[in-house]
Length: 243
Image (cartoon, rainbow, N blue to C red; front, side, top):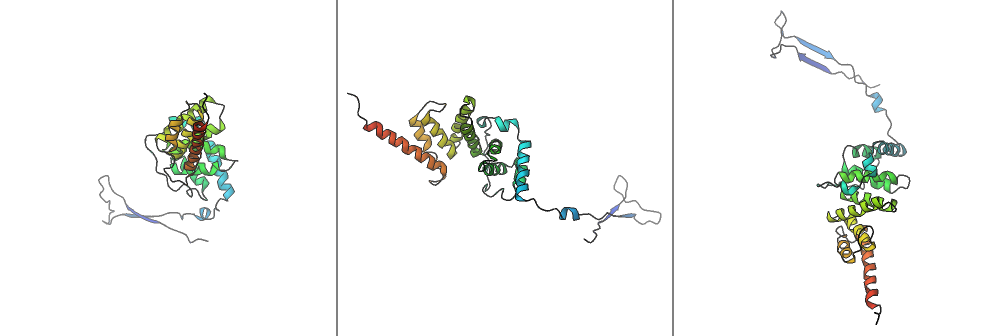
């Protein structure tokens, strides 16, 4: 059994001017209140959540709190002027997914983005990554905007509105120096996906995809696309011209 805890609170009684009131003996009246012991045993005995319970709780938080705009909105319209500074999102939500979910809906941009990355890498939860990427976008995570646009382009290829939104988003995030935004913007320019085909401009924006180094996946994707453009140019140059 825990030892009882008592807090002794001593206070003066006085008039509205703060003057101490005295009894007939001239002594200052003191009152002592003994508070009921704080019962912390219940809180102390609560067991931590299992990883499965923690994950389930996080999923429920996202399902119940994600708004219609976060599920269906266009990230191109949600990009704020000020960008957020992310903490180390690779480990930010480790062993505390439900905490991260709560923090996300308290406007913690790193929590939103980190949890979205975790959910994205699991086929059972990848759909719930989308509103989290969108929410991180509204909080200034430009990569979150690009990721949400990628979800639209992959999942809604037959929806002209969604595809146009994705193309516009990549153009905007590339202008804000997001490597994946530039890689995807260049891809769309090469393919002519809901935007005029422009190989010259595609080369320009693809060249902006390596700001985070040659090993960055966005850079590698851009380099692969540039190699295809080089091969196409070579083929065009060596093809016999009609006489």
